[in-house]
Length: 104
Image (cartoon, rainbow, N blue to C red):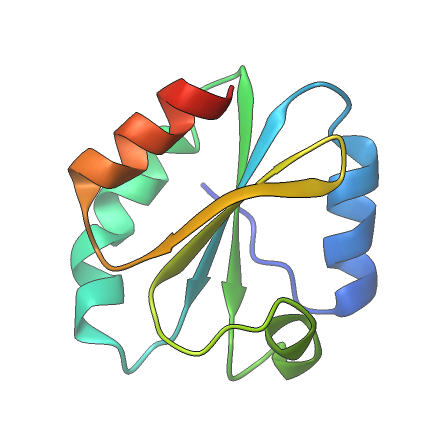
């Protein structure tokens, strides 16, 4: 199961501890229909061992959402070595898979 990061400190620690792995951050909200539709795919991806998949609920972790300049959900951000390398908004499974393949 993709862990949910509830604080900015948890978010920063996740990026710091990922090593060489690609970190995929799913910025989501409980009330967001498209977020709920893509959630099973995100869950499936979280079982991969060569990437780190985490969730940030924008209502419960506003500090991280603001730091990452999230304005729509779902937004997926991709980090490598603690740096943002890619992002997109929308519940596109194809875009999610292509982005992972391109950046991992």
